[in-house]
Length: 132
Image 1 (cartoon, rainbow, N blue to C red):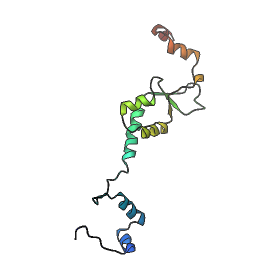
Image 2: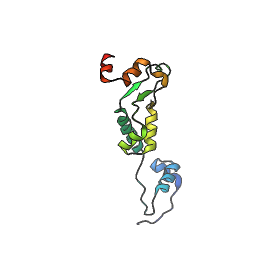
Image 3: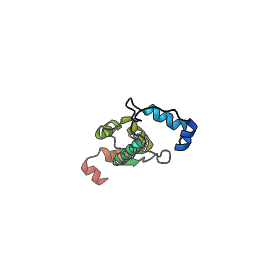
Image 4: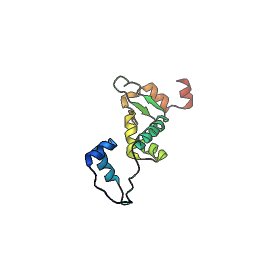
């Protein structure tokens, strides 16, 4: 028989295969000129999302010092930004950004989150840090 087309009853065809009209239209839309349907792509984004989440979670984060009750965000070190993180991973940036945002992280700590003691420790010498 080969690639010969035969007319069939649409209702009988759909009911026999227990599929919807939309399934058939989607398959026909994905069919290439050679008659082969392109490979399934579902699930690949979710797998990538899981890998990216694990990757992002490797970066140390901390909660806000003074703004805890007003914000549920955690904060990453100030020398890290999303571009640097992405360049390390080198994967799809838009999906990476979506995963990053879904983790409720931020790079910028609120200015009111820094008390004088914390600032002196952060900017202090090794000796000053040991004293503090």
